[in-house]
Structures are given as C-alpha cells and as structure tokens.
Length: 312
Image 1 (tube, rainbow, N blue to C red):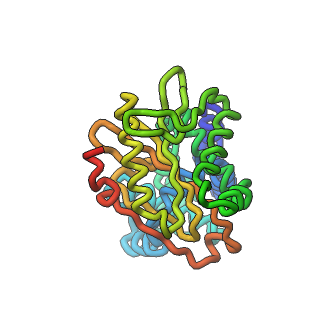
Image 2: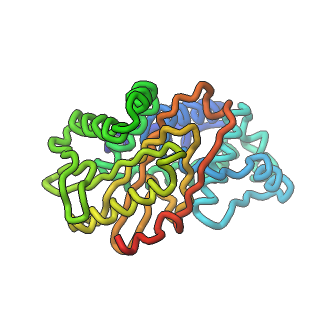
C-alpha cells in the first residue's frame, strides 16, 4: 500500500507542478495510471456515479466570471473530476476554458490556479481513501479487479456449468486467491452460533468473517443480498469483530447500484457498532464495453438492506 501511495503522489505531483505546456499530458498520464491500478480505479468508479455535467459547470463559471463549486465535499470533488475528465477527453487546453474565470494574464500562473482549484481537491480525496483502506480490503479490491479484468469468462463458465453448486465454486476461487496472497488459513464453512460462515480468514490471529452471495437477478436477487448482509452482521457479532465482509458475485447482465449513506471506498453499511464492507464482482461476459452498451441497473436502497437486520 505504501508503494502505491508513493507512486500515486508522484503522478499527482507532476500534475501539481504543470505548466501551460505540460498540463494536458500530465493529466493524461495521471488518469492512465488511475485506470490501470485496481485500487485507484475502484475509488474513481465510486466517484463517477451520478457525475454532474461538466459543460454545465463550465458554462455557469464562465457566465459568472468566477470559480464556484458545490458546498459539500463529495459534490465538490465530483465536479472537479467531471471537468478534468472533460478536459482530457476533449483535449482542451485548460487556460482556454478558464481564462475569463480566473482573470490571470500569464498562462503558467493561470495553469497553477486552475490546478490548485480543480486538481488538488481530487488528489486529496483519493489520497485520503487510499490511507483508509486496510490490507484485507485491498486484497478484495485486487481480487475484484483480477476477476473482472482477467478471469471473468473462466469464472462465469465455471459457475454456469453447475449453478446448483455455483456459489461454492466461486467461494473456492476466492479462498484460493486469498491463500495465494499469503492468507494462510482461509477456512471454508466454519461453524458459528449463527450458522456456517462462507470464509473465515485469520489475520494476525484475528478472525475475518466473510459471506459470499451470488446475484443472478432471478432466484438469487435483492433478497439474497439482504440475507447475506444479515448473515455477515451475525458473524461479526458471533466472533466479536467490529466488521465483516460481503462479497457478491454478479452473474447477471445488470449492474448493481447500492444507494448507501456512506460514500467511502470500499462500499459499506453500518448497523450499530458493526460495519459490513460490500464488494461486487461482475462476472457476466458482456460483448460490448460499458461505454457502448445499454447499461441496465438494479438499485438497492440501504433501507431495504437493513430491514429486519436489527434481529440479526
């Protein structure tokens, strides 16, 4: 994690020190690095949900002739990200957009003001998220990326070969990955007072309960996920741990969108003194990329997830 943070800060420093002649290339390099790194890509994906229209943001600033962002932290960061992605996509020199907004004649000085106003909030937000992710969460983020980037078709085919034992098949894939990453005892189906935990790992001799569920959009749908959350909360209580993990293998063609009050990465739900971290691994082998296909979503509200969990 420290190596990742060092590299991330180096890429960000290049952008922070940009001149009018290097800003576009440094932004491109920065976002290429983000998109090629599982941890950072996960943070960016979470930020990109409900991203505001960059052209509206820019038009409002140009009309008012001043730089203005939303008052809340997350909305501010999302606005910055939206405009930066627009600049990169359209290959626009930032000073041509914001010349009348910052009222600075020298292009390098203008570039510095733009970077401080737009890039610094995004950089600080991502850096904070990196610091808040522990080693086990990082392993699950990497497992998600590995499964979706390299093993998607293999895991999906292994699941549909026998859907009756499909959840166990995917459970085995996750346990094998954790073992390869140095988790010596990713036990399967150990008993607890609430039942059998799908995976119980030991890190520094402390139990880490992990529940696995499949989402197929049919028999195993929203209620199946809610059941998994309830079980994860029960296991956290059984083992006296402040947190547990819920890994959802999405084998449907739909994207699962959780509407949660907590916006950090990884996604999480809090109930009392327990936190359940949620990871969705998308295994359906779409022929088209996300940007080119008609993306269908299944929204799951936090209130729905927490129904009856107080009894867990």
